Image: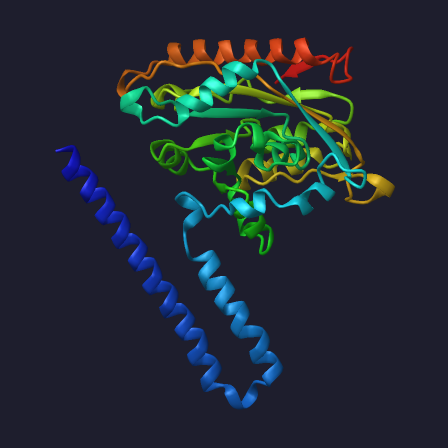
Length: 344
């Protein structure tokens, strides 16, 4: 029965993919037909621009890969040129370092991730804080700029990052994110990734935490964010708390027009932080990013129908305690001895 079910799922996926390709070809054909029909009024320069643009829009925005397993590019993730932005080189804008709470336990978790579920396999959900204005610390774990990919290769190559849909709608930026392994943050996509034996990186605070960002303060929006915990329980995935010291120091922010901006965030799911960085520009202030990766919290798998609110609340409370403990344990060595973590 399992084989029959698996075959049906694979067949449905193949059919869906084939239908998408047919739709792409049809839309691109419509673009070309229009250009041909109006060739007399279109200059060669216009054709040279619009045909590639049409091809890009159709085959990038209509491929639907952000709702599946994405299209990561490992060579890009290992690209040394990225170190100019975040790296240990003399010219690097940010100087990142990674602090491991328990490197041995993390390596054991990576080893379990190589096994199928039937043989004790287990995926990890890295819950990263704080969101900040941009989430540069996220990039430290998505690449090898601080050696994370070298030390824990499959936590990068066999993982997907959940990001807001709006970020995958920006031409160019969309490709950058998807090459780094990002997919849509929808629940269905997250479940697909875990079922495909992929680890997940998530930013539970999302837009609300992005709007809470204040330079010099450590704020996380977590009290009501329990979806990632329930996901971990349903799939038996370990929860790994991650905190990026220095993330909130890259920009200044303001509360100007906060009420209407919060209203837009609530209705459109779009955060509009007002910020400025170096020289009053959008360029972030240079500094050090200290990314602390916590010890994996192993979670017992429970079937969806048996998951209770009490179980989710208790697991969530345990995670919040683990994040606080991680913050307090490492804040001094990361250069923030007097910092206090605020949980909203």
